[in-house]
Length: 587
Image (cartoon, rainbow, N blue to C red):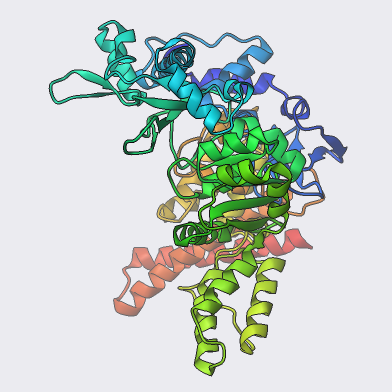
């Protein structure tokens, strides 16, 4: 495949794809009226709030607001790129993606980088078997208690001591060396020559969620700095998104009901050696919201395992602050602090798997950790000390989504301080954003309502013209988008909700449109025509009112000419007639 995928092809592809069949093959659906339901695959829940509409060719979760077309589902569920999702759907329905000319450089770079990384992974594994340094590397792994089976499972390798052992595999091909540099495998000297990034190190391949090698970590053999080295960020590797061993631990995390997050890949491998196979590690960066999102999709609980020293507790606090906004819907986070001088690797080798699992069950809950740390910074025996605790805790608790956990955290703060009201003041500047579930039930403006109805039933565009006087209010928020949607849907009445949304993928309006497409208008009737018609009349009346207000404001400052006076009188008559029609229609 090359070049951009034509819009017409995407429309045809979505028209031939049944989103219900697609999702049901991955998440079993049950019939619920006109639609189908299941527990959401994108967040943990016990009561199904994930719906799939066959008529709209659109999915929506009322719990976490995940939504989209068949393309969006594959991208989210299978972690595919847009093009990969298109390719899979095309294969499913027997369509051949049209050749539209030479491929863009960015379309071919990712596959080429992944191939280079896969070749490097094979090279490193071969060196561990055959290079003269392999005896030293194997001895080190055995000293760390790792078996050959675990080393093979994690695809451990060896980067020999030479400056250009890996670089030489390119055989002087400048294009290949440039590709290896973009993949983070080699670097260029000022002289223009290339050298290997990893030298004299045991190599740990880092996989993405699909199991593809995207980077490497290396542990120095012998003395030297840095002791551990990770690949730099590349087009296929972002440290804030990837977790070491996530691709392998996914099913075990789901089975255990929680994930264990440690700080290094050697910790992960050592835990696996002793039967703890639901552990992952961050990759030289603090925990990010993206990390949490991926883990919470697999299980409702995350347990962070840190060293018990000052650095470990500081890292735990950073993880806590990142996690607070993600704690809705029954999610839990705990912290396991190991004895001074221990890390998961050393502790499990000394104490064994069962002892480590026992420690995990005694991990400190996030609420306990938060209040223990803040209480240590105040003197609760003093009135002003208790007041200080409230001031320290309020901005943190405000980050937690509204719900039972937030209420219980404020209740605990009141119990510990005696202060009766600890909620943040709801000023316009400090207003807390609503939770995802609340957002879906907020009342929409008439403009947003019209857009939402049109998205959910694109056929309305062919039956209802937009009021002509809306043209006078071109600066009205959302008006340009409404007119664009109406034009597209009117010209192509067969478009479904999913296909219409795909027209706006990667635009600044895409997120807002996805939310509006999932809005529940609580209408019993299958046809939205009466509500849409009434909404258009409301928009028309609002536009008339704004035009009248402008002329009245002018009249207060200056005498209107005869043309403007006539225009004002006509607007009053038009608004009166419109209101009369609406009243008669409502009787």
